[in-house]
Length: 483
Image (cartoon, rainbow, N blue to C red; front, top):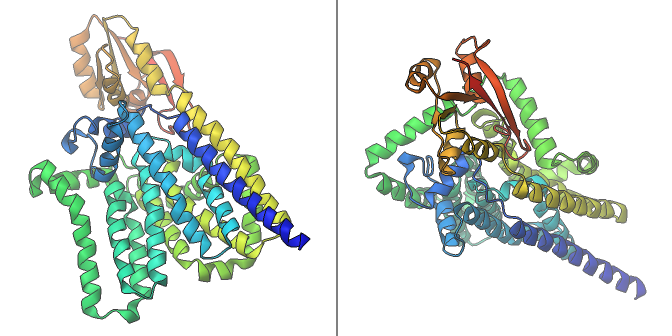
C-alpha cells in the first residue's frame, strides 16, 4: 500500500511538473511578444492585414489565406498587425497540446503522455519559430492536428473518420503550402485501409480532398480577378522559387552533399533538436542512443511519424532554402515524437525519467531566454532604419530586401531597392549632390556581377543582431559610395 501511494504521488508530481512547464512557456510567449516585422516575408504578412493583395506581395504567393484570416481575427482585439499574427500563432500552437497528448496516450500512460507533451511543446527552437509573425507557427499547429487525425483514422474501424484528415489537410495547405509533402499522410491512410475501399469509395475521397483544397484556392482566384491571372502569378512565383532566389537544389551553388550536411547537422540536429545548446545536445544524443536499442519497435509502431519526417526532409533538401534552419522544424516535431514515445515506452526507469525531466526544464529555461531575446533585441534591419532616419536630407540609400522593411517603417530618407550595377550607375546620376549609400547585400550583388569595387566605397557602420532569429539579415553594413 505504501509503495502504491508513493507511485501515485510520483505520477501526480510528473503531471504537475509537465503542466506547469507548458503553462509557464505559454504565458511567457504572450508576455514577450515578437512584434518586429524585420524581414521581407514578415512585412508581407503584416501588410496583408491592412489589404490582402497577392500582386502587391501582401502577402506573397500563395497568399496563406487561413493564416491571414487568423491574424485578422486576432487583429480585432490587438491593434498592432505584427503582434496579431504572432498571437494567433501562439494560441493555435497551444491548442496542439491536445493532439500531442492524444497521440502519446496511444502508447503510454497518462502521466507519461503529459511528460511527452511538455517535452515536445518546450522545444526552444520550435517555440522561437512559433513566436514569429510567420505562417510556420500556425502551420506547425495545423500539422499536429492533421497528424493526429490521420493516426486516428487509421485506427478507426468506422470509415467516417477518413473525412477529418481531408479537411485538416486543406487547412494545413491553406496556411503553409510548402507543407504539401505531408500529403503522404493521406496516401498512408488510404494504403492502410485499402482493403476497406472499393474504387468508387477511394475516388470519392480523392475528389473531396481536391474540393476541400479548392475552398481556399478559389478564394485566391477570386481575389486576383481571374483564373488566368492567378495561374500566371503562380507560375512566376514557382519559377522564381526553384530557379532564382529560393536557394533550392536547382538554383543553389552548393552540392547535394553540402546541402545534406547543412540540413542534417546544422539545421536538424544543432538548431532544431538541440536549440544551439551543448547541454541539450548531449542529453538528446544520450536519449537517441538509448532509443536505438528499440529502433525496430519504433519503426513498426511509429511508422506514420517516420514516413512524415522522411518525406519532409527530402523536400527540405531539394526544394527549400537550407540557409534558413526554420524550414526543417516540421521534421523536428516528428523526430521528437518518435524519440520521446520510444524512450517513455521502452525505458521507463527512474534514471531515464529523471534525465527527461532535466531535459524538460533545460528546454524551458532555454526557451525563456530565446523568447525574451527575440522579443527585445532590436533586429539589424530596424537598427538600419533608425540610423538612416537620422541622416541628412541630401542622402539616398540603395538596398536589397531591406527596402521592404524601410518602407514598412515609414523611413522618410530616400531609399531604393537596386539589383544591377548598370541601373545603379544610371540612377545615381540624378543624385549628383547627394550622399549615396549602399548596403553590404548590394555590394555583394555587384561583386557577383563581376564589378571591381576597390576604392569605390567607404564603410560607415555595421548593424548586428542574433543570426538565430534572422539568418540572412542579422548583419547589415552600410557603405558610402565614393563618386
